[in-house]
Amino acid sequence: MKTISILLFVCCLAVVSTITACHREATKTQVLGDYITAEGVLEQQGFTTYMYGTHVLTVNAQVSYVLESTTINLDNYIGFNVVIKAVNTHYHAEQGPEMYNVTSIQLK
Image 1: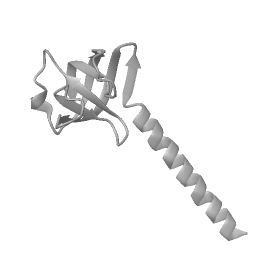
Image 2: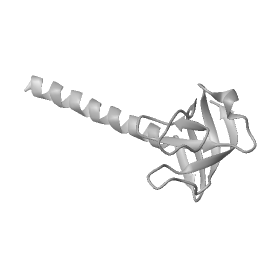
Image 3: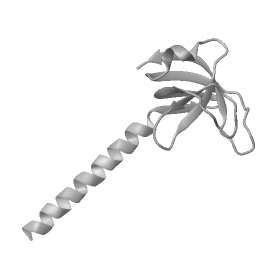
């Protein structure tokens, strides 16, 4: 009986830990209409099948955003954890992701 109680306790801890991690990832991005605020690591855009945008913000393993900016030199923030505010440009390839124009960026 004691072994079952310990096993149940460990399972509960694992579930709580997973829920907390998911909530933390979910709060890194806020969407309000065409405007987003997102936190992640900014990287130079490499070769892609869709070939638009200049940079990518990686929020987590499953979520990233294709970026450009008409007012900010994003190269100054490559490799840093940042918080961006951006506007959806509604530009995307048939199978490609949406592209966002960064209007504000801060180091996190």
